[in-house]
Image (cartoon, rainbow, N blue to C red):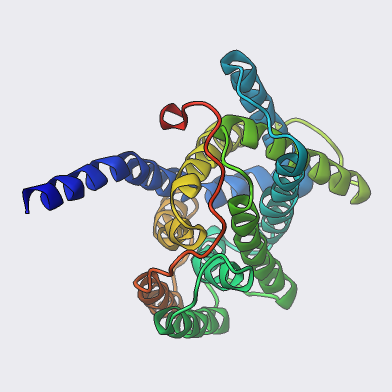
Length: 315
């Protein structure tokens, strides 16, 4: 009995850093939609995303060079670039575009669907198995989203905006699945490569959209941009990949369930965002569905990943 207890306590201690990273990811990422709204008030959306990710990529490259982190090569490099294009580039392009048209709380609520989308995509790729809890939870979450979309969040919703937000959910879910297929390596090097690829992609989209590349002039825009580049990108991306390396794709994504709470509170305090009754009811239904799906604990059937390069315990 003592041996079993000892093993259990050791397992709990080994997961403690991951849980700490998970909590900080939720707290920091929850403010991103609000900061993006402030950034979009002065900067064109695709250019704002390009500038933010360019700064974040530069920071990761500096850290990678100082630490002499091993860069991904071969298939790992291709998958890392693909992860950056889908999970970061496409997701940011759609979210920045949508946040010009919807409020931050609405965008954050859609992010609560990311775990369910990730679960379904991971099952489709053969990485995890679906269970009845996951399926029922998914249906309940969709019902909650319908309630919210029907009543809005103190503002009107358009079909293009809803489709863009659903596209964000799809890209983030598929990005997590792509990442799980990458041999395990340094989060710093992975972020440096993936964010660089996404910055190039967003820069091209910005040029094609005819946006004007300019720097912010207002102090609050600079503050929002600085937060997004350093805290909302460097720290958030690092923490997310740290957790994703240690948990399954769908389990890691459950952090997105908690983002609407942080986002709505911050948005209400800073922007006076109106929270309607339909939002509250729909949010409760959606979070209930995702919570139910989280209890399914899908079994991973993916191919074991390669051992980490270097000591990732100190990443």
